[in-house]
Image (cartoon, rainbow, N blue to C red; front, side):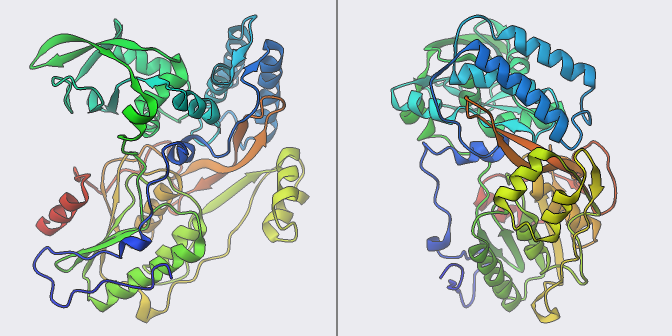
Length: 481
């Protein structure tokens, strides 16, 4: 059974660690599924014809505009009415007179959706077209790029050009300044601010996103800076599957893992979603062995985590809490006919939560109060020091959980400021667009963190430090603290 069998070491040497057996470690998904891509910018799939007439795309734009204004928690929370109106006009004018591919049609609508500047409100990308394109021998840009506060640098090269090493600054692509290219691509990535937008672009990966925005291109001239001098390098695109997907490491790579070093434990709970029985079994087993080993310091790694559901995160937090708790201080919803239709189709309509939606007047915004979550029995709880590792890729419920732990005084956040806001507009429900069958994810709610702070800012760690990415190096970093 998942999480019930442990490897034990009687007398571990200094800095030696143990893990749960590989049989319960999540496997990397097949490259053609791109599930982590979906985690960042929306769930669902889009299928259907490969070309869409201009009349269909314009009808979809008007449909999306109507449903967002009627059903989104607050479409003007991060963008003004004038900005959204202007974005709609631009989108309608950009359609042109010719039919567009799934990628092209999706891009037009996505760019409009992104004008709300809400990272959780998005259009599912054209997965099927990319899959078909890749399988048919399609190519992608041969460099993955890091888009952090220090500029744009090579993160990983998929070419054999020796000069293109990790950390080399990028100046331009095909003569266009790199910041201009990044800004253009950013129009298709919804986010509340520039910092979060660039983090999401990293999560998507530069080669995939470049194809989504610009389409196929078989060669590039990239200008980089090597030893202080600008150098232009001509390179060919690489095959999407064999040259990129098979070699690419996903940014959102959280997976269930537990390791020990000295009197410390490093726990990665993985994404807060999936099979709850398997997840809770893992958490139970993890805290059981943490207790048996007399751990004094617990490091919970929420970096590179896509988030998920509060039921999962609260179960983990229940092992830290010393009293009943909530995952937020307030949770507000906006009822709408579209949400009611979705609720009737997918939920237990007799539950308090569903009934609150179905009985609320359309357009009404109201607060729904969740019951407090009970802590674990005293003998099961961890009472040592807790540190929560975060970075700009700590998304959604993972960010909320990090804020929850620090707001209740249960632990200390360490690492890098998150892109996600701990008080955020989220709680999604999907709508399938007519004819194109694209899936639009809409934020129906607003979550306020435990301490009540509604600042439009990422979660700032209490200790801002650089934490290694490599697992073994993280353990060494813990040992040296």
